[in-house]
Image 1 (cartoon, rainbow, N blue to C red):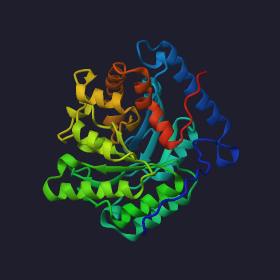
Image 2: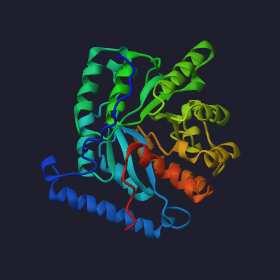
Image 3: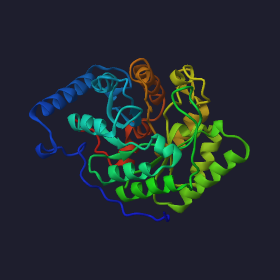
Image 4: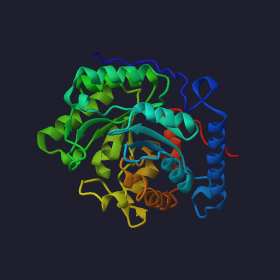
Length: 338
């Protein structure tokens, strides 16, 4: 598929303007109002530099698998931690339609994201293009989940995936993101790459950025890159952004993967703090939850880490990272002051 820049379009989505025709019921509206009321009440009682001072979070990329049997857990955790919205995709045995239906129940809280991961993607089978194309034609979704370019094997839960940035699978998804006006979230674990392969992925990724200078590309997990490498990319490309998912000590101590840990104790390291202050528009908060333990055991602790770290930054920087950049890139209405 030829590379081209698309025209941004913003069709109506169920998470922004629900209607009775789209399946919203009176009970759904009551449930949504109750969730929002609980969120606002918590805003009044939580102290410190957190929600009480106006700081709320948007999780710009998370996933959920079928082992989280009650999806309402997600709303409960969001309410308890000051996360106003979550961009959510299906994973493993969970379907994209289940996520769309969940978002329709909570249109002001959940933004359903197109599912990109499957065995058909990994093996480059026609079903990948058919399924992704069908989702792109739907008006149910407000984002596209990350595209795996290089993903190291994660035990028995996730295989290694290697898809170069100029692969047809990537360009097909990019074309859809361009047409819908969505950032393209990409996943490359650079610390797990070495030698020529690492250089190829970096060069091809930068070529993709240069080919579409007006379109935002968001690198999940900061690409496992350290602060100097991120600084170089920011200086070279005006359209690259970095998700903070899995860059905190909660994940670092629970995983054997070489994730970047931005923290020194309860605060950001001096290098990462200086970089966020210098480039506040380039960092986007995300958790990238997937498994049940992410949604149950790790959720509140991760938010507490980030709340403490952002309290150490200038207020405008903290708000940009916590929610402002996600609102700008994904065209999300900000939380109302009332």
